[in-house]
Length: 109
Figure 1 (cartoon, rainbow, N blue to C red):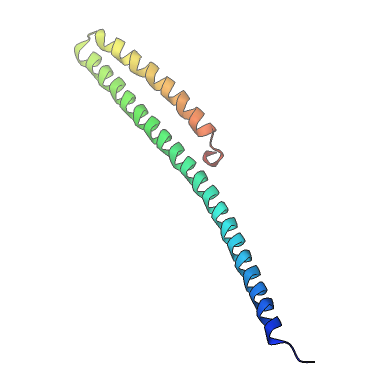
Figure 2 (spheres, helix red, strand yellow; figure 1 turned 90 degrees about the vertical axis):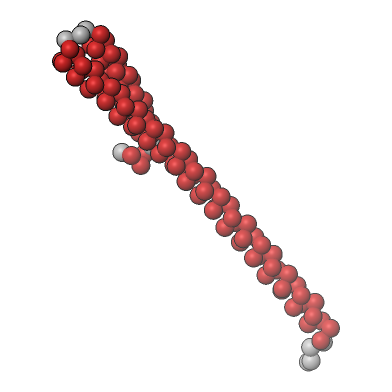
């Protein structure tokens, strides 16, 4: 039994189209996985930026408290104590915010 050449062309074309469809499907699947990974990484970067900004705020307010404390010790001026206490209060609030930020990310535990 000999095969008909005109019958082989449609079979080869069908196989080729099925392979192309399979490759398109696999490409879409890989793209979906990569987009999901990109979104997850973007969220992590955003979280890290918020943590870094909060840490910078902590450093700044602690520096303000130290400066006010030094001013009081040098001058015995009670106004410095008010500034010191305000800086301490802001530092405590900022540290609570930092704990919340770090607590929301399981990678930080």
